[in-house]
Image (spheres, rainbow, N blue to C red):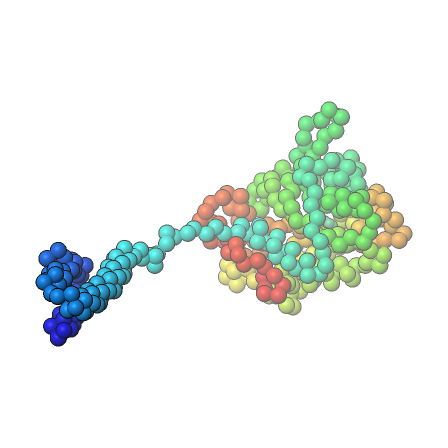
Length: 356
Ligand code: PHE
């Protein structure tokens, strides 16, 4: 019995310390193999008398069970270790730097439109749109510009070939036709801005055959010149970020507004830097006025009940002034260097709360 206890102790201790699966297998063969030490003892049982055989057999079986259990436990332990080692070995380093992602940037025109929408949106204006190819009626006649009016010459209009109905459509020369479309579409009140493309046959450092304007139209029962001045003053100050920006409303003429004005903002130069709001010179930035009663009537709006104002400004022009861009032409060149320099982060939407 003592011998068996010793044997079990020795074998289970060595099993528990087996260094790897091969060493464990060698131990299993040594103990339980065909010629193993426990197997040999099992075989020797045959020589004993039945009484002694049963007692010795039982004890031997316990040793055998203890040793084979120890082997199973150690095997699982070694397998786990082997798996851990393999996993550690095959680990993929996901912390490797990813390939650089290239991020585009917003074109200054898109950015400026977003800013306009943020500012006028805060004041309750909705955004309206209209077609680039316009009828003569919407672009001119309804705006109180009859066929022989000299203002038509000033617009350098692109005319399309006559269509089957004998009508010559035009590429809209300003966003003002959307005033007409808005008013003919339903009853007042109106409070809209119209950012969009416009076209004139004109090309030099400050003119492009395609450019952008933003139109504004407000019509209600008691809308007056004070609202026009207040709205445009608040807009210019918010857009240029100059709180006390001086504005000048200079009498002017447009066929579709009466009275009409052009708006200048104060500026000065420091070296070759343009300083908006500081200095004694004036820059013209937009045209505006009270909507002409004839225009209201042309659209079915009763001028004895309703009145309002309209304005229009060049988007490139105010973008160039705000962001210090000296030349108009690169706006349409798609030169990536220019876009990277003047472009804006796409995920930073301008808002009146977070800043423009
Ligand atoms: N449509 C005019 C232009 O293109 C601008 C304007 C719009 C003036 C609305 C007055 C009112 O020059």
